[in-house]
Image (cartoon, rainbow, N blue to C red; front, side):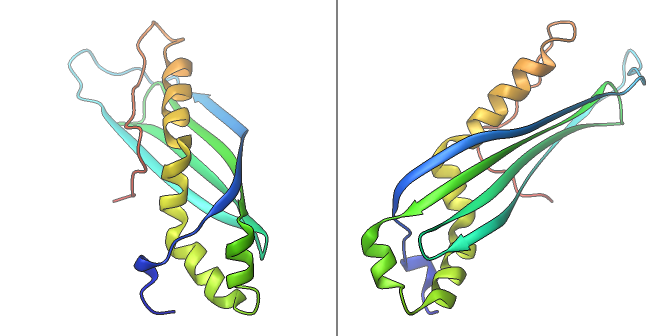
Length: 144
């Protein structure tokens, strides 16, 4: 498909569900003057795609480097339902639709606000240990 960046996905509805929260306490404590780096990783996987819409799992994980205190992961499932006009446009062009969804998935995640939700949830959970919350950026972070 040519010019994927010029094409758009339009949704009739978007439904977001919290799917999983995983918090693992690590018994290693940081040294008093030790620098700790917060490593945030965002990822997603399209789990279902049809002519009517698609579903993906979005996951944010936070680890500390060196490996101390905890690791945390939150996963959301997002259901996107295409507009009737988009369904008509791609009725006989499913491969093109699939390519467009894969190209636009990260943008579709950002438009839902789910990354902010993940950031807020992580800060609320990490605050439970001594009141020191880990605040992560509220936008999709590509792994480096």
